[in-house]
Length: 124
Image 1 (cartoon, helix red, strand yellow):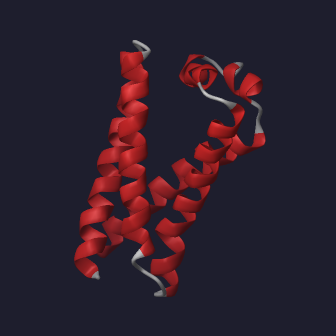
Image 2 (cartoon, rainbow, N blue to C red):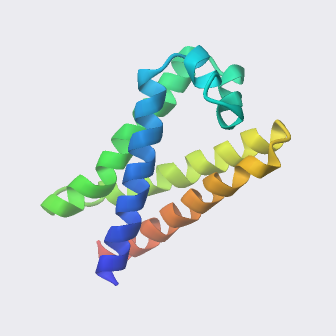
């Protein structure tokens, strides 16, 4: 079970490192040019997108570093809770924009994060 949980945390960490890193590295205009999956960026300020990117990167690191070092392990379920909330918000944004095809990934990532919340919280 522990190996499966580490795999889920690794998948989430990579996904959010890539997503957050992209938001930090590119301007809103460049993100919009990446296609319809990033069209939501047009509804948010540059500062908001950078904040989301920063939270994604910090959360991704908090998913793997604390349990790997066995230090401040409460950060892992806390970060996963943040991702559940973030993905809930992302789903709502896509639904409001009528992008029903775009809600699959946020729902999947949110469910995976919810698994981490419960299983890591049980381990505390």
